[in-house]
Image 1: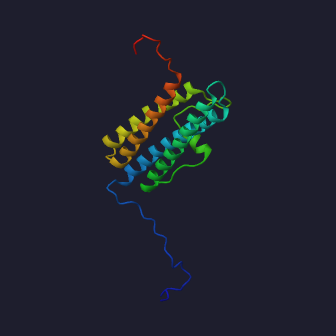
Image 2 (image 1 turned 45 degrees about the vertical axis):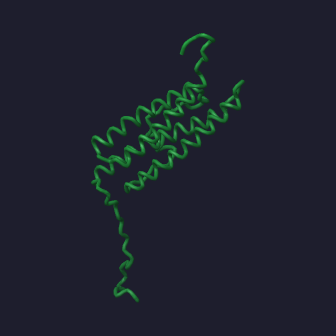
Image 3 (image 1 turned 180 degrees about the vertical axis):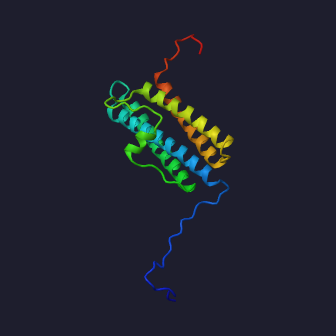
Length: 178
């Protein structure tokens, strides 16, 4: 069947459909903005963790090398989930290094290979940011889907922080209570 209009106008109309999922446009935009900030935090922490992986040295080299590799892979997966959630809400995700640096709440430290203490501080900062963002999702935006994602991501960060903390904690002496 041919189109019934052939007067030089574009006969293929582009229709942009926005999600009709019970969240109004302003709420979805606010949540997408929040997710992009979180995505920037994850991207910077992933980069710092990868730098620690590349630059690790010392007596615990293999153990730390493996730990950092596991963590930057987890951070990469988290980034994908956050970006996908922003897209599910009809948003566009940031993706350039400049955008990540402009949106992150973490501090970049050029020229410094992060150590466990710096990574732990960043992990704990991410946990605090995620906790606040999750609270906003339920109290201000009524977005249970994003809330669930942020809480799951927060728990992953809590576990990564625990793993880092465990590497620096002193083992108790015999007879010393914990």
